[in-house]
Image 1: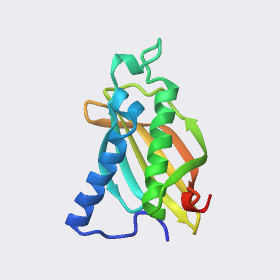
Image 2: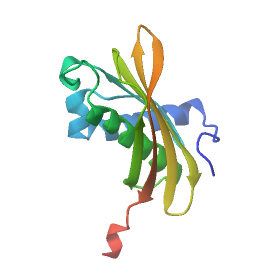
Image 3: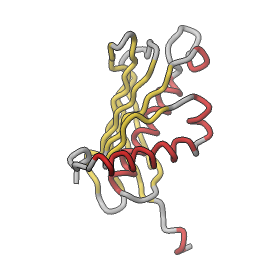
Amino acid sequence: MSGGDTQVSPEAFLAMLEMGRGVLASQPFSVLIGAEMHALSPGSVDLQLPLTAQLKQQNGFAHGGIVSYMADNALTFAGGTALRVPVVTSEFKINYVRPAVGDRLIARAKAVHTGSSQAVCTCEIFAVTGGVEKLCALAQGTIAKLPDSSKK
């Protein structure tokens, strides 16, 4: 199964989006920085973040750790919804292609391959100014199924 191929009903989409927003709201760091979930479907996610002064480094760009956070969380939501089980990030890499300058960051991730215990996902991170999106980073990661806690 590759991510993004599955059609969901409007009702199922809203239920999944609300579930994803609940998971995001349960992450204290995500709440602290103001992350927002704008779309979530099986194997696909759109996370956004208002880029406040507290999230920038000394040159006015989004701090690399914030851009990396966006990639990590988006990759994990994409992989988790593709696998349909609790997951964690096993690994990811990120390429910063330009400084993230703007009012908002958008991370769009999708599962590109899903197996029985892991999903490989890709993510594009954009900086937005005045509605114009500019690619600032690309990421790829492996999202792994959590072990069944009842078998410990």
